[in-house]
Length: 202
Image (cartoon, rainbow, N blue to C red):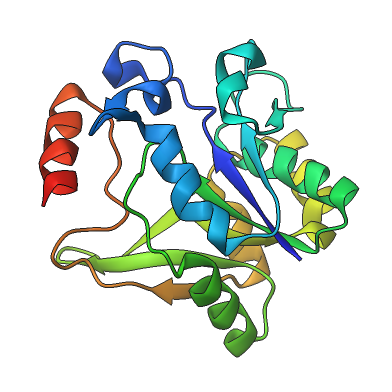
């Protein structure tokens, strides 16, 4: 089984702090829309967030806090998800960002296929980028439960960038189109929220 973990542990500094995922988009919290897109793609689902879990009670998901002290970034959320998944019997997790309401409905299938075709256990999503050729989206990935202790050790060594760890394991890339818009568009600023309202209406 592949489980799903929504990463909501960011600091949201460009939105003035707080939980971006609880902001309304088209009349509903962003997080509700993320849940609706992920639920059909996974066998179980949890939310990675720090602080008081009661603020997410209405969504009915297990809330997983980082086990690494201090703000260690998305890899800490991945580890929390892997530890939870190990308890549920899942073999892997797919992670998505809580502030990205338009990610692909076939994300899990495409990540799984990319990893299988490359004969590796990790895959990251990517879209075309006019400057770099390809832009990877490291919070959207497939992660094996079997590597959770390896990830724990890397975090304890001070590794914080996702790709520094994934590149050690030869991560595959699942390519997605960015037309008519980037499906991994995330809401970082009030202006982004306004743009997302227009995208949702379209």
